[in-house]
Image 1: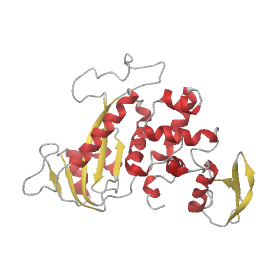
Image 2: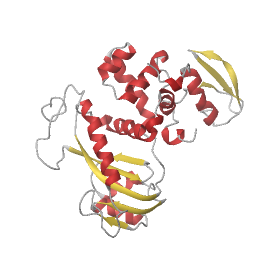
Image 3: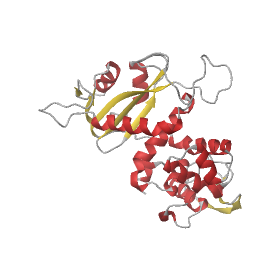
Image 4: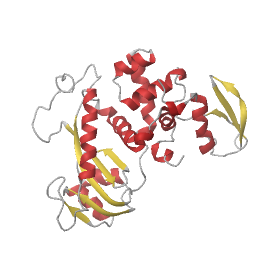
Length: 297
């Protein structure tokens, strides 16, 4: 069931916003005119380059069928519905719901804040490596419903993820190929450039990245702790995000490591939209107008 604020909006009327914002997907010109309809969507022609297109051209949603069910898919994703429940809501097979889910998440997985402000907290979290969905060629026996690592503590089975978050709630995360300074620096890029202060638990690689960005670094010896003389310096914000992410992920009983960036983007979008989450905003995110842009719409 659609949320009340979406009213009678259709997918065509929602994704038209992308044309208004971005113009021609081929040359970015805003000199466009209507050019009929096709497959339930208006088409446009660019006066500058002469090419025709619709609002989904060059997006992950191009060519995806059953547009009449997209709002229901979006609603299911906002609610965090399991694949089986999402498929039932949309009256499709589970494999169709799975493909639709990941098409919806492709653009959201790369929708991240370009910079952080003020006090920024950073920390690592780890997700168990998974080959879920792979039928052959596994390097180890398969696990049941997520399972557990063969070894306690950190090991090659644990996939490292860096998360940085400012006090306004902007969240940046990335899956790291290795837990070292080079991987950390490549993942973070310039995201710390606009920050003023950095708080973390003292990991060597993340401290090095913060200092390379010219930030004063406050190392908290105990996760969640703070110094009595400087209570504003803590990592409660990022640790809270870790807790919410891990709890939310339990419903999926493990996700394939290759799909992990999509699930990070899913959770990041939910956090960014908060109480403003709606199928309309979710659909906009799937065509490249993610929540970090939607905030100003």
